[in-house]
Image 1: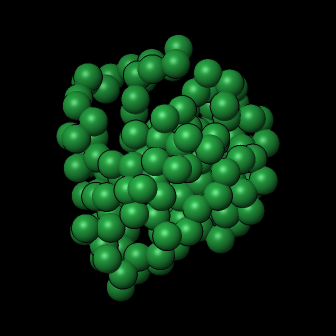
Image 2 (image 1 turned 90 degrees about the horizontal axis):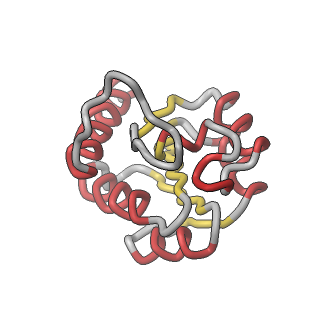
Length: 138
């Protein structure tokens, strides 16, 4: 299963996702794409073996992914303080991959009906959803 992790800014959310997915799904093939070099570096330090930075890697990786995980802003053009380009959000949105979007209420994007949970709780829920997807495909 090809799992694509996309993050921006400092890459802290992506790093935590990489660690959690690596621990719970050791056989999964992970790719980390940062919207900037700092985010990519953080995810590589967290254990991502395949990584790249920028718009074109997002577009290309979305074609091959089975699952895409990242903050909800990755599907909103100009979010993450402008780091998500329109081409990135379209590629993610049009991908056939299942998307697990972490509802982070930041960067002028607020998700109604979502309690203000800790990042750990959000990642735990994302892992639960990922495990359901993996179990269905096994």
